[in-house]
Image (cartoon, rainbow, N blue to C red):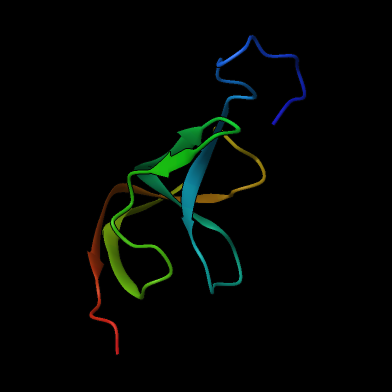
Length: 83
């Protein structure tokens, strides 16, 4: 996020981030899923928030972001029921 002055009642500090799977030795970005928003709220289009998921798709090298080497293209998520 960036610091900047905002107009009254305006949205500020726009941010966007990839949705990734945790728990692996390397970060795996999920194509088609992202979080975006501003200082007031960030929304994500992933159907799971801290739940166990099964992710399917096509594993490929991520050329757009050197910090994230792998991406799951055409990603689909299936959430597991909470215990």
